[in-house]
Image (cartoon, rainbow, N blue to C red; front, side):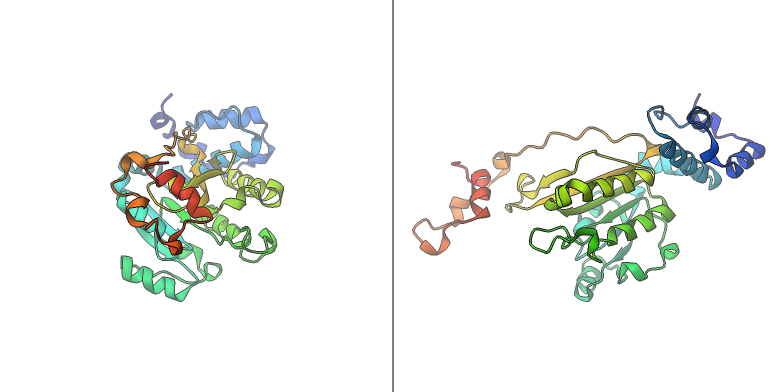
Length: 293
């Protein structure tokens, strides 16, 4: 049965859904409720995940917002995003090129905020822990490169024991209130293995408990493979709200961009100069970007 038919619940049914204690229902009863609400592909979910799905759909029905959100998915240029820990606007640059509109940004660094304002004519707010979450405008996508120092090999790697590490949970607070369709988070490569993988387990568990799909393993991307001559690996956390369906399989990434180049390292390096020898990570870059490698 189509969701359009199922959404035509009468007021009595809505009241029952709102008032019942879902935690007291069996998994079988929760699955029945999912079917009534038009939620599909949920038989493999546990009770907590089913309750999340029901609450999300219930909220959307109460707001008469579901059809609008589906329409937004089909018309991506109408999607709105917020840019947390925005820096000077890396996420903004990418999503703006896709036609998305930024409605809110935040960064604790004053100089970053000034640069962001000059770049995008949008004044970011300051410390994320002091923001009134209810006053953040409605949005569909949450972007955030939350502080990496607690997880970086270049720091003390205190993780969630570092105040900055706990800022991930400030993101969660915003997600729980605004319930966006998608989350895109970014951090250093070491996040994938920090604390023997326990840090990633906490993050993944938090994401699923909020009602979002994410990939089971951290997704590692290197800008080196996206036509950027820099060896910079990052964990990218992509999340999709469960009522919108599961995440697609990750695409294959071409790790040899030579065919897209018009100039090469050998064009700008003087091989006779001892001052310009490639060392360290630059050697790795050269392996991919040098036409003769």
